Each structure stands twice: as structure tokens, then as C-alpha cells.
Image 1 (cartoon, helix red, strand yellow):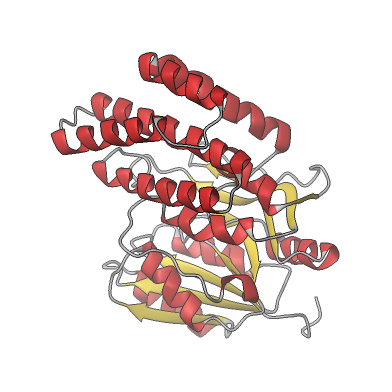
Image 2 (spheres, rainbow, N blue to C red; image 1 turned 90 degrees about the horizontal axis):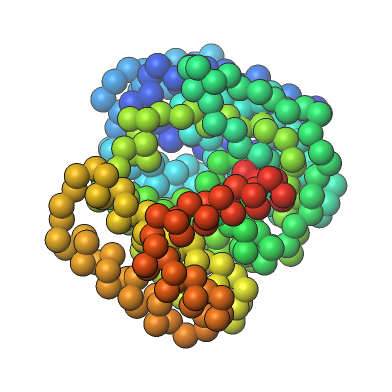
Length: 327
């Protein structure tokens, strides 16, 4: 593409990924959209990643490296947001891969449709499950922020990855540092809600590496942090008087509480404070104002038949994703 195209920044937080960093960076530098600013944020990685980042910067003038003390993925992304110069920005995790034309397609989706945000489908992969680039996928969909809010978790994803943001919609936003889970959703949901148009490209162009030993693959009490985000989202949509999104979020919140109870039990974690927190949050949610009668009945059912409720809830989420597509 011609060099006068707008500058697009790519922010990559880097920490203990030396086995995966090179393939990730290769998939970025080989993008068909050439006018890129690639920011590798070395988050105090104790392995060879700092040297690898510097080596990549020496090879490609589009690559900048930020070295900093370890502060977590949110802090690293914020460091990138503090220095990026692009008219648009996207985030890529350092152990993931992207299709060679992802940036070009997402940029075109924004420009052609007058949207400030575009996103594509996300596909999990592992050493045994290859990346499948769905080039023959369906056409783009133009979605409203309200529609994305209703289907946020089941379809369009809390992840900042697989999305392209215009500078103006993120320049005042930052990730919550210290929150171990749910920090992605806390960043993306108010941005997406504020959009009149979001371009969704129904094609898998972002490939998310499945890692059972990662923070999301193994259960720990740190994952309870996501409930803080869900509480904030519930309060946000209640204040906005968005009843439909509010009730969708309340149902998600309730299902997540039940899921945490189940995972704690299966993991053999016996923590009286955590168990009491879940019990209190569940009871408080069931007493919330603004809930539909259907939700109140579902909560009563779920409180008595947790396993059946969770199975039906997540089956319905999978059905919605098949129906609407999603990240």
C-alpha cells in the first residue's frame, strides 16, 4: 500500500515468551499494510526477550522497543499507549500470530464504513491445532455499540486484541494495573459502547495461542478479579439506563459466580473468605433492582441447580456465537 497511508501502531507487551516472540514479530513485519509503528514493550522479562526485541529493532526501522520494570500486561500496554504515534492502534500478544493482511483489512473496514473501531474473528490454536485463515468468510457486519454490549462476552469479546481503534477513541483510556483478570474487559467495554458503528470482519485473522499453564488455563483465586470488572460494568449500564445490556450483564455475572464456585471446588481450594465473597455477591445480585422477571426466575433456578444452569447458559452463549459470529 502507498506510504502516505495513515500510520498504524501495533503494541506488543513482551514477557517470558522467547519461544514464541520471533514468529509473532514475523507475522507483524510481514503485514501487507506497510506504514506501521511496531512497539515492543519489554516488561522486565527475565529471559532473552529484551535482547531479542533489540535485535528486531536493529533489523526493521519500524520497530521501537520500550524497556521497563515488570508491571504486568496492563502496565506494559499502558506504556505503549503513552508513546504510540499512530492514527490507529491495535494490540497483539507476543505469543500469538496474525494473518498477513489483518491490519489492512481492519483499516479498510474502518475507512469504508466510517467506523472508529473494527474487529475480526479470533481463533484459538496450539501445537496440535493449526491456524486456519478463513479467507472465504462472510461479508462485514456493521454493529452498534449497544448490540455489542448485549453480546459482549459471548460474541464480540473483552480482548483488546483482534481490534483496530482510531486514536481518538483510546487516547484517554488506560488498562487497570494490578487487576489479574477482567482488565481487558474493563478497557474495551466503554469504548465499544460509545460507538455508533463497529465494523466486524467475519474472518479469523487473529490466532490466539492456547496455553493450559497460563493464568487463564489454571484456576487460582486471582481470577476472582474479573468480578470487580463485572460489578463495574453492571453499575455503568444501570447508570446509562440500558436495561437490555444491564440484564445481559447481570446474567453473565451470575453465571461467572457459579463458575467460580465450581472451579474452586474442583481445584480443591478451600478459602473461607473467597467462598463468603461469592455467596454475598450472589445474594446481592439476586436482590438487585432493574432485573427482568425472567432473570429473577433464572437466578432462583441457578441457585438451586448450579450445574444445570451453567451448562444451559454456556450452551446458549455458544449458540449466540454461531448465530452472530464473534471474536
